[in-house]
Image 1 (cartoon, rainbow, N blue to C red):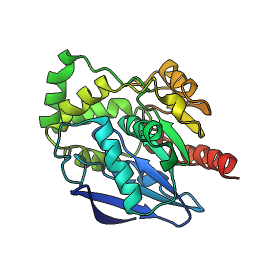
Image 2: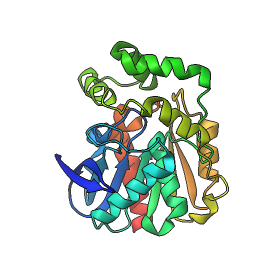
Image 3: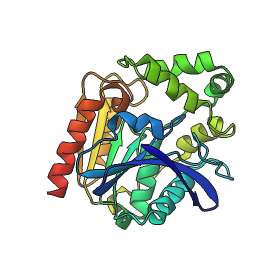
Image 4: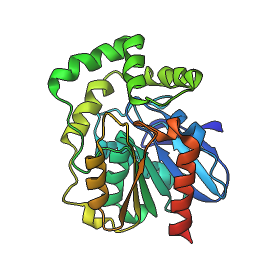
Length: 258
C-alpha cells in the first residue's frame, strides 16, 4: 500500500489504497491512523482505501475544535475528491461515529456501513475526571502503550503494535481531550431512521470500551442493521483477528452486493 496525499477542505490528508474494484473506505478510531487497517487491506475484488483523518497520523490539523460532524464532513469531501462510487464505509471506534454522522446526514453518499466496536448513535461518555489520565497518555508513551494494550487483549504482533503507538503519538495535541469531548456530546439517535441501507455491527466480546449491549442497540437503531459477535477479540478485530474479520466482511459484502 503506497501512501498518497490530497488536499481536502484546505487540509493535507494522507491515505493508502490497495486493489481495484468497488470501493471500501476504512475510517480509524481515536489515537488511530490508516495503519490500523493494514492487516485487512486485501479484500479480493474490492479497492480498499484507508485515510488518516484530520488531527491524526500523517494528516494535517482540523483547524477547529474536534467534532464528529466536522470529521464526517472531511470524510465526505475526501470520498467526493477521489470520485468514488458510494462506498462501503467501515468505521472503527470513534471512526464508527464519524461514519454514522456521514450516513444519517448524507445517506446517498455510501452503499452500506460496517461498524467495528463503534461508538453508538448516542456517543461515548468520558467523565471529565478522566481527562488528567488522557493528558498523561498524551505525554507518556509508556502509559499510552499500556492503555492501548488493554484494548487489544488478544494481539500477539508486538512489532506491529509499536507502529500503532508511533502513529498514536502523532495525534494533534488538542485532539486528546477534544475527541473525548466530541464523543461525549455526539448524539444522532433521532436521525438513524434516515439511513435504511445495510449496516453490520461487529463486536469483540472482550472489548473493555464498548459493551455487547451497546453494540446490539446500535444494530437495532438501523432498519437494516445486523449484529455479529466475535468471541476471541477485544476492541479491535481488525488488528487482533484480521483473517476472521476479512471473512466476516467478505460474507457481508457478498450478501449485499450480490
